[in-house]
Length: 139
Image (cartoon, rainbow, N blue to C red; front, side):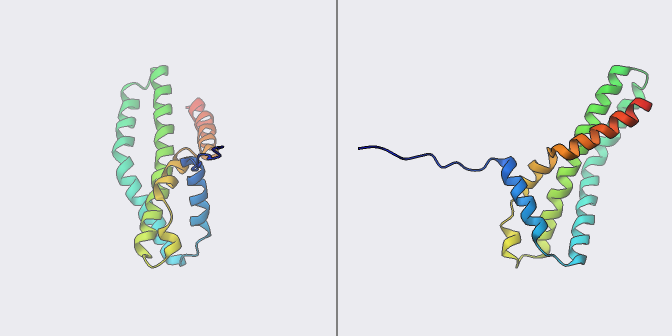
């Protein structure tokens, strides 16, 4: 008797997040709902990230002449911007779900997968890194 059972491969969180983001972008929300969820998602994200950003700024102010500290500041700021990108998309999807509970296709979207995917989005990360290199070096 031959056992031909193969394990079921579940998509990893990265692929799932990419698929979920694409599904969310294909959903037709009203323009006003889309704008409200984006703006409120951004405001919530800023409320969460602002204390961290202010602490980073204080870190830079204290160690502004130390080049190693400046590099650490740039690294932490880069990570914070990536996290802000993920959180903004997470809260946008979460708010869209709360505004439209009757949309089943919207309710099927996993906002945590989108958070993971958008936080570690390589295109955005490289873009921000290039901006930091260009403006950080001239600082």
